[in-house]
Picture (cartoon, rainbow, N blue to C red):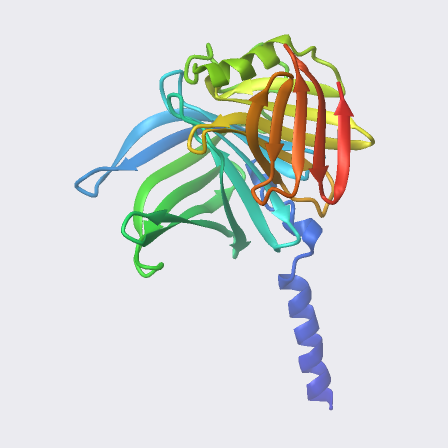
Length: 311
């Protein structure tokens, strides 16, 4: 009996050590908050690695800690990227949403995954011609207070073998990045010429004419390819991004609020005479942005409710 009680006590103690609560899991990316110098190594054709790009990453905790916002910039002509990530308790995994825009090329894609033994691994599958499927894996490892490593790998045989492409080596520059809104141009924005099609110019006009108010702030990022907005209304904080998805040939809205159980919603649609009309992929939910030269309101079906935000 004494041996049984000892084993039971050990099992309970081990479970307390190794089982994290949802609240604890939702802070697993907090190590990344701050400003970082990034050395990007690229695998060459002969399979050797070369230091090829230098950049600065600014990482923010937003929505009162619900989500992590990344702004990654090499230079005006170089690589620029954005990501949003949050722990999704409905899946018990992290959701990652990324947009690394090229010249007149924009669109959001998603991964999900988790941390195990101090290492984060995140995956998505992409169909290829010839009925092939490619798995992408993004990994965070070697994490210390002042450095970390990110690398990607791809598999075309169901995960049996992996091939690398990029390695990013992060070295901390500062504990906190310059606050959003403290600079005239948000990190990753230069002169707006990366995305200069008429569809993107409509977004740039909105951000240029939007009054900056505590309850609603709108910013242009990725040098004209996307706008992001922060809303503080109805005792809640919300975040959204709006871009023209060049792969779908539709405008794309992503929306997330600060509630623990909420998840990011995506909508796609067209510009109208008085704004934007968008739908979820299944067509069951709607989002309507009323806008002239600036955004006047956002109406959205979200988490089972119909929300309306006036600006």
